Length: 230
Image 1: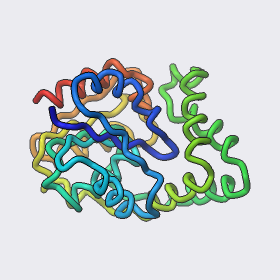
Image 2: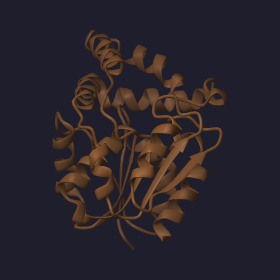
Image 3: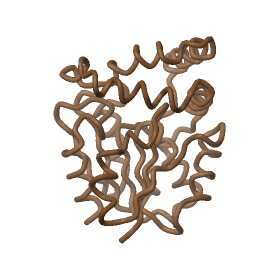
C-alpha cells in the first residue's frame, strides 16, 4: 500500500489527524509530518521530503496545504496522489497579513494560550463553536507547538508563494475538500483550486468549518478512502 503523509495546519500537531490515523494506519503506513523545522514554506517542505518515503500519497490541511503545494514544486515525481483540505492556493491578502502580525506580537508578548482560546472557536462551524472538546484540542495543539513555533509558522505563511500558476501542472489524482462553512478558506477557494486542477475531485463537507478532520471525521475519512482507492 502507498504510504500516506499528512501535514498539519498552523499551530497543529499530529492530533489534528488522529481520526485519520486510526482509520488508515491498519491498512497502510501513515506519517504525520513535522512542521517544526524551517522558517519558510520551502524549508518546511524540504525537511518533510528529507524524512518522507521515496513515493507517497500527500495530504495537507490549511497551512499543510501551502506546504503541499511547495512539495509539488520541489519533488512532484515523489507524490502519487494529492489531497488539499481546507486550504487556498492564494497568497496572503494585506488584511490577512496585518491580522497575523497582530497575533505574532501578542504571542511574542506571552499570550499564546489566550490567543488560541480566542481563535479556536472562530475556526469551527456555527454548530460547533461551543464544542469545548474541539476547542480544547486546538488549544492543546497550539501550546505543544509553542510560541516560537507559532510565530515562525505565521511568518512562513505571510511569505508563502501564490500557488495558482502551478495548479494546471499538477497531474496526480487530487481530492480538494472543504467544510461548507469554513470561515478561513471557504468553498469558493476550494472551487478555485479544483477548477484549475486537471481531473480534481471536489468534496464539500456539510455542517463543517475549517477543522474538517476533527469536526466531521467520518465524512472526511470516507472522502479520503475514495481518493486513496481511485
